[in-house]
Length: 312
Image (cartoon, rainbow, N blue to C red; front, side, top):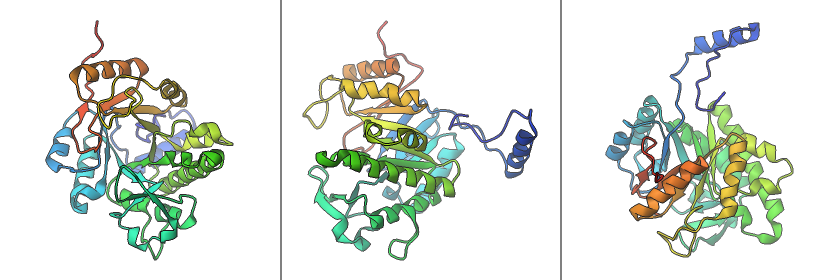
């Protein structure tokens, strides 16, 4: 059954299925959630009016930073998106922290490593540390409810995990660190499902992590999809690089798709010609594309499935 379907059992040919159907009927079946035909990714400068307008559109996967809005406002937005048949994932960085995060002051500074050279105020962390992982997985006196629980309580249907690729930071220990990071991802999925059975988990980038794992199928089973940045326009510029596809990453599209995972692509480009060509390539590769500004402030160009951008 697709992760986008409701949990109603339609085939009642066995007593077990009948029993399950009765249980689901008792709990109440929700409206079938259609697979997203586009996605939207914003972490800064969220505007409720813009997001509410998008909610009136076709099925969309929203990836948002919930703490950019007052909590009550975000909770109302989450309800509106769910009612409209959309999917809401909330951003969560598990390989990096920020001085603006609610848990930062209570965090033991021995966990904190070097500052991100690009994003000031963000720091790499020792993601293997049990205290760090407890921020996301358990309720503690120091940090309160787990990060995952906080997001679910805000109406998030799942999480979008960033800096999973931090396992590459130490080239001499890539295999060991990839396993640590993958195990962390699996723990997050299990924790989320324990609180919300339909909990979704997407990772960003880190496409090759499975290659270093003792049991890659465990990792694939834990994730529901993946978002990939700058697979088509690779270069030294902060924004609007030329078309220079990363063939290794494009090859990984098929790997994830063969495991039943939807691939969401994002490019930081500007010109109309580049955007049209990119959307065409995305169609060809069976991925859902998005164009955005690097700061993710909402300057997005969404894909329109009704329009073919491939030149006839």
